[in-house]
Length: 50
Image (tube, rainbow, N blue to C red; front, side, top):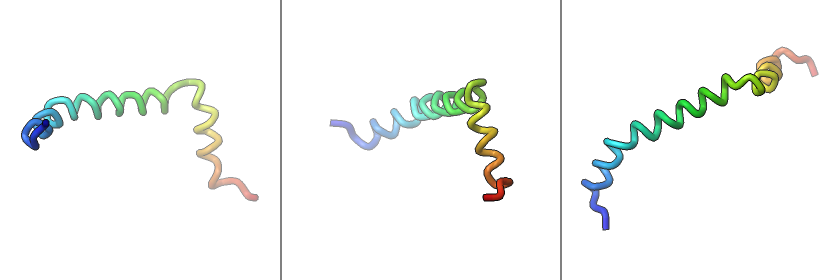
């Protein structure tokens, strides 16, 4: 059974690594060339007159 101290130690050591990897994944998704059309369409939504 894990104690609070064990969980806190794990979060302090590996939590930053985990969130950095997730951040890099989100950035890679956002700048991936095949996604540019989707983001361009979304960027123009406020300018459309429906």
